[in-house]
Image 1 (tube, rainbow over the protein chains, first blue to last red):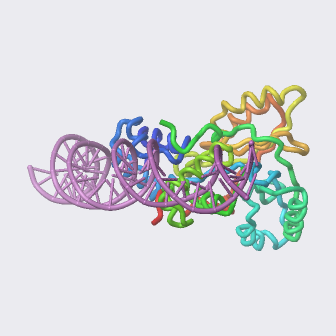
Image 2: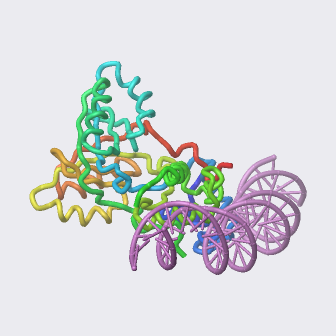
Length: 149
Length: 149
DNA sequence: ATAAATACCTTAAATTTAAAGGTAAAACAT
DNA sequence: ATGTTTTACCTTTAAATTTAAGGTATTTAT
């Protein structure tokens, strides 16, 4: 499936705010709302749109710490980790990467105690390196409300 | 503002799928749709909800490469970088972190040529390390369509 | 040339949202 | 303790949106 100019315009708006109505997008790109709905459905079916996610400020909900943790898995421990990591609710995002480390993940934690507990879980799988996130430099979501008219 | 059990239930659903209707969420958590709308608006105003984003498979749109790049900024080059990075459309996410490197970012690129061009832009600011993403281990969004009933 | 598929349209019914007004319980002030 | 205010919901209703159906013109395939 190809992503033409109209679909890019639709995707751009949905990335800005996933709760935009199809009617609103249609007005902006010059299509009827059923036409937008149909194009969106096709992009979902084709796997171009993977999902719609709400961005939460964990900082405001008692999760004070964000960290980037890399893992260099011990021999034979990568596969068990890949299975187990799906259960770790602290993990926001996890990639398998090239380089000295095998895994990089973004985790959200309540505090240092929680971080320590989490690292204790990880060290059975491999050697970890932790980087505390000081600030988010690029933050696309900050200005979006559920609907902008 | 406190996040009580009802708000967590609402947030959980919105994280699963940001396009769920308030009516649908209300049915699941036992509230009327105006009550859900009101709670969501308050969480937006309080900054608990930062935004609603659509997740796109860049792989399906010609952007074949995802990479994690760290930057160890040269003396006096961190601040200029922090300003400039907002303009780099390749950057999906960028954090300032503790440790040997100052910056970690997630970037999306068309191909190796594009990666090379991008690194050329970065090396005026500092020393970079690039890790190609092989796969996404944890992917929450994969199963969500625009509406599940 | 004809048939089929595509991408849109319009219309109308079902659903959702948004606004308004009401109520009961909790929080606050006197 | 009592009265007042606020809060968090409710219901109702109008406006808006979504969904489904049916139609049309243009492109694609046979």
